[in-house]
Each structure stands twice: as C-alpha cells, then as structure tokens.
Amino acid sequence: MVNEKRIIKQFMKLVSFDSESFSEKEIGEYLVWKLKSLGLLVNTKNTTGKEYLKNHPDSHPNIYAFLKGDLPGDPILFSAHMDTVVPGKDKEAVITEDGFIKSVSDTVLGADDISGLVSIIEALSVIKEKKLSHPDIEILFTVSEEPFCEGSRFLKYDLIKAKKGYVLDLTGSAGIAAISAPTILSFEAVIKGRSAHAGFAPEEGINAIKAAADAISNIKTGRVDGYTTVNVGTIEGGSARNIVPDLVKITGEIRSLDHKKALDKSEEIKEIFDECCSKIKAKLVYKTVEHIRSYTVKKSDEVVKRFGKACSHLGIETEYINTYGGSDANRLNEAGIKTIVYSCGMENVHTTGEYVYIKDLIRSSQITLTLMTENNKSKDGGKTNG
Image (cartoon, rainbow, N blue to C red):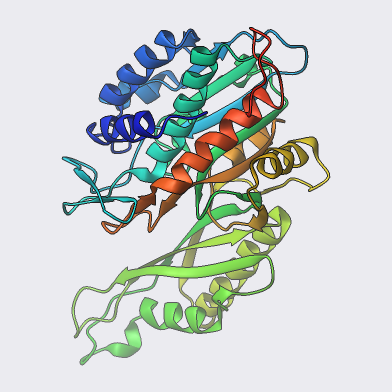
C-alpha cells in the first residue's frame, strides 16, 4: 500500500535541508507543517531545559505529535531524529540504476535518520489516504540525537502516554531490530606531575607521561567481555622534548550492555590510574560522565512480539540483535516506555559513503504502517494489507 515514488520524493526533500546537530530549525519547521497536514496534533513546547534552545538558536524543539485513533487499545509511539552528523551541509543525493540512494558530494547522505523520518511519514500518509483504522498513535521527532541523545534528554516525558514504542534508527536490512543497547560512559584522567629540565635536573621532575603510559598499558581495551568494550581514545600532554612533562590528559569511553559492569569497569580504570600515579607521587583527577543508560527488552515482551508479527505478515524475516550504539530508545526505556530500535535501510552511516537501499526503505515503511494499523479494517469496511 505504500507509495514508492512518494517515499523517494519525500526522502529527497528531507535531504535538501541542512540539519546537522543543533541546526535543525528548517527541517523541524517543515516536519511540523507536514505532520499537521496529515491531521496530527503537534506540540513543540516539550522541553524542560530552557537553556537548550537559548544556547542553540539554530536548533528546533523536539516535535511531539498525536493522531487520535478509532480503535481501542493502548497508544503506540514511533520515533526518529531530525539531525545528521557532520559534514551535513549542502547535501545532494542521487538515485542509482541498481536501486540505491547515495550522496554525490563530500557530505553524509543523511539517511541516518531521514530513512526513519520518511518511513513514519509514509505510513501516516497511507493511513490518511486510505482511511485506515488504527489505535492512538504518538510521534516523536527529536533533535540533537547524534551527540548522545542530547535533545531527548530535555523532553517532557509525561506528554507520552504510550507504554511501548519503536525507534527507527538502525542500520541493516529491513527486519532487523535491536532489543538491547549499552550504557555509555566517558572518562577523563588528568595526571599532574612536576616539570623540570630533562637534562640538568630530571630527578626534580615527576613525569606525568610515564604514569599515563604505565596506566594505559595495564588497561584492557577492546571487547573486554561479552557485554563490555573499553577504548582509550586520546592522550595529550607535555610541552617540550627537554622538559619533564607535568600534565597529561587521557580520555576514553566504556560501553556495556550491563549498566553495573560499566560502572565497575570505570572504577577499575580509576584504580589503575591511582596506582600508577602513586608510584611516582603524581596526582590524579578522574571524572566520568554517563551519557546514556543500557536497556534490554525481552523477546517475550509485547513490543517485540508485535514487531515479529508485523514482519511475518509482510513475509520479512526478523533478526534480533544487541547493538553497541546508543539511540533515543535508551532514554525512552529509562522513562518506562518499552522500546526497540529497528532498521530502515541505511548503511555506512556517519561517513560520506552513506547510502540507503530503496527496497529496504519501502519495507521499513511497510513495517511501520503494519505496526500502526496491525491487521485492521479500513473505515469503509475494506481489508487492509497493513
């Protein structure tokens, strides 16, 4: 029932907006108009952090929208984000002969997350066009998702009545859904030593780089267990090759599908830095920031079973995975809304080689329509295939 030409046209329209994180004003205004034209009630006064828009004047509020249903049952939430990563200005897309949409310039395509936006808009368009019956539907289009879901951090969650939701923000072919995602912690270790001339008085110095090197060599990185990854990402310090370095800063991150494991790993890393600094009497300032918190949704939960039923109805195979990337689903689950993330056909995201397979974009729209309508009847009594 979805319209391929309309899907492609809508995708190209959204690509035309410059919508890097914190610069979503134009695409946001368009999406507000689009949702209203489809009959939804739209609310953009949903931000708890008043300083957010003040500090980011080119951004846009999160968009919450509601479509009243004519069927009983709990409301269902569908979400995608408006922003893209850098470089995302002056994007230009081309349709290839073999059925892909890709960037033709030195920018990202923006399929992350234009694919999700388009799938939701197309499903709503079909509902209006065909007068399909459906329960109450809630829509959430967020801003600044890429920098650790900053936009959804300030959302007024009491607006949302749904207890189950779907976020369209995953790479891969249609039918893939992530039912688990990690806690992401960043850490910063600042080591303070004492400077001295490396040739005339090295014994008077405390070499901060030595303490850092000792610590890093003792920190296990990469995939440290079946749930957790650790990375040391940057190191900076020292002022000259003939001066004992008195200051070094190391940054890194921890991702774990188990929140407690992430916290324990951070404490373990802190203890390693502490020990290595104590050996040479250097001082340590260690800080961590929790960006998003892990969640796991069981396959037996209704939100997962419903997704499987929708895909089965369409003849699409399902695959349930754990992802080590975060999304707005992390925040929604933390707010008590059982949410999974499913694929909308985007590939090679966060690179200038990003592309979307049109066939998967169509399937994503079909899945979304089916989830919104289930196997209901249209208002004129005709059968739907959604």
